[in-house]
Image (cartoon, rainbow, N blue to C red):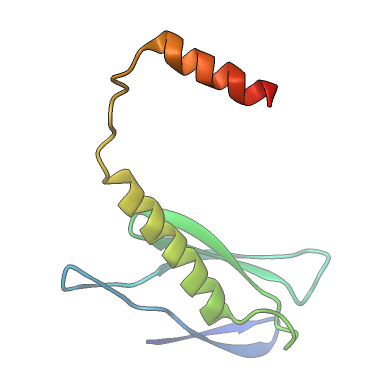
Length: 109
């Protein structure tokens, strides 16, 4: 999917990374953009993906990391975070004194 914006008088094409999760297409949704007052080349783009918000930066100078790579990295981070949250938490079943002894031993070394 290709989205189009005009930033600072220049045209910027941006590809949005599409994730397939449980046979549903998950797109990143543009929430807004923030232009840097002191750097005309920098624009922060705020997106929402799977209920989480992330920010990528469009430098529009031709030398920085591509927007596609930034999307890919941030969406992978969100997917990883959500998959870790779904794992059941195992309660501690050992003795507290033993755990404290191991902790103090670790700190001493």
